[in-house]
Every structure is written in structure tokens, then in C-alpha cells.
Image (cartoon, rainbow, N blue to C red; front, side, top):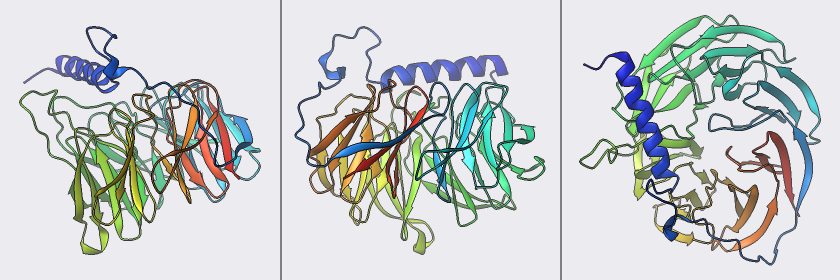
Length: 385
């Protein structure tokens, strides 16, 4: 059995190797045209996009940071310790807090308690005036944003534990652990809270549904099954967040599949499609949208998983998880551009720069437009006219 140090080094090495491979970068050089970002071509705008408001949160970005929307407000955090609540309509700051430690993940909120996690694995809960309510220690590092609801704050730590803390006191009330593979992917994973269940990815291509109050495991679903002869080939993890629409809950993995589970049928798969993504997916009533691992944006029929269209104009541009709007889908890229694609056939409708470098946080569809957390730590609301 490996000791703790050798195991940790092995996993870190795996993350570095996987990250280099997944980013489309050659380990032996960068001259291969297959991995070069597609140059941007001129787009004749078919929709008008304007910045409705812009608010600075803090500084920086990262895989563990994703804004959320609760009751007409946006909550966001940045690695330097900034946490904000912002009015979604105006962009005005309702409150701002500075946690006295650098952050690795944020933000989770139910509108009453807002949670972030420090680089040392400390969970910090704020009340809804931005004051620190309590601090508690997770069992290891945390790179996935917490979720908050039903009286608990839930985090997924790097030792494969999903653990819950009492939202009022910070006491740990339950912990669920599953064995993990030798190599894992440090990817843009997120948890969700759905009808009293904390839904989390666990390494190896699975989702787990845990009763948020009791900690009892209510459901486990397989998104993908590891394949290949080497540990690196067998790296397979759910990325992004599972998304629910009607009776379907859909998720995607790296080196695996897109699966839509039928909630009404006890969570059995309604359909499965081979696919590999690094960032996650979005849904509307017609399609499932996801960039694949080379950033070809693909739309699949939500009823049966058949491919409707694939847009290659943004290949290798390190796209974000998409946002599905009424008639368009939006993605951000490594140069701070947000691209709008037609729902029907994927052609480019518009492009706008929000600045700040690479956009790493998922885009969010809102009634006001698309909410973007920029690479330099701002929130921008893009309204379509």
C-alpha cells in the first residue's frame, strides 16, 4: 500500500499530466496545428448584445469558482477572498465581504447562508449581511463549490468525501465516502441540490444523490465506465454540474458519455451518447448543449441524444460550460470573448469581449441575459436585444 505522501504525489502528477493532455497541449511541443485555437472570423451580428452592468467582485478566477443566482440576487467569490451579493437587475452590491484567507472554491448559498472554502480546506459560512457566521474544517482540500440548502452546507473534498455541516452551527453532521481511482481529473465539477438531495460527482464517472438532512445515499447513477489499458486512459470524471429539466437530469463526463436520467423512472438512463467534455453542459426544451474536449460545440436532441448540429468555429478555444437562452446558446473562451450560437443550427449569431483574460467560470442564463464571471474577477450581465 502506498503511504500518504507517495499517494499524494501520484495524484498530483496525474492531475498535471491529465491537465496538459486535456488542455490540448502537446507535452513535446506546441507546433501541432491540431491543438491551436481556431482564429476568430468575422461575425455579422444577428442579435444585439450589450453590457447591462459590470461589478468588480475581487481578483482572479479558477476552476472552483462559479457564480450562482438565488431569489433575484447573484452571489460570487474570487480566489483573493472576496465574496459578494449583487442585485441581479441593477448590478448593485448588496454586501461585500473579505475572508481573511485565500479561497479555493466558492460560492454556495440559499439566500440566508453563503459558503466558501479556503485553500486550507476551511469552510467559511457568512450570514446574509456578509458577516462570518462560523468556520469548520473539511477533511482535505476542496476545489468544488459548496452547495447550501435544507439547513446544511455540503462540500466535496479531495479525499472523495461528501460532507455536510449544520448551516447554523457549523457542526459536521454527516460524511459519505467512496473509494477513488489512482488518477483523478481536477476538473470544473459542481454539485447541485435538488428536492432535498445533494447530487455530487464521485471519481470514476458516477453521480451520487445523498439525503441532505440525514446523509443517507438515496441514488447512484453511472455516467461513464472507465476504459483503456493505462491509468491515464482510464481517467474518467463527471464535469460541470448535472442539470435538471422536467423529468430529465443530464450529465457529461470526460472520456465518457452524456447521459440523461429519467427521474420519473427512478433515475434510470433515458438515453446515452458517447462524448467527452472538460466543462459541462446546458439544456433547453429541445437540446442538450456541450463543448467536447476539443471545444466543438455540439447540440443533441434532448429526447434521444441524436446529434442535431456541431459547430467547429471555436475549436480549441478553451470554452466554458454553456448557457442556454431562449433562442441561443452562449459560451466564453480563453481570450475573454463570449460567443452566441443559434439554437436551431449552431451558426454564430454574435460575439462580444468582456475582457479580463480567460473566462473559466460557467456562464449563467438569467431573465436579464447572460451572467459572466470574468477572468479578472468581475461580474458582467450581457443583455440580448
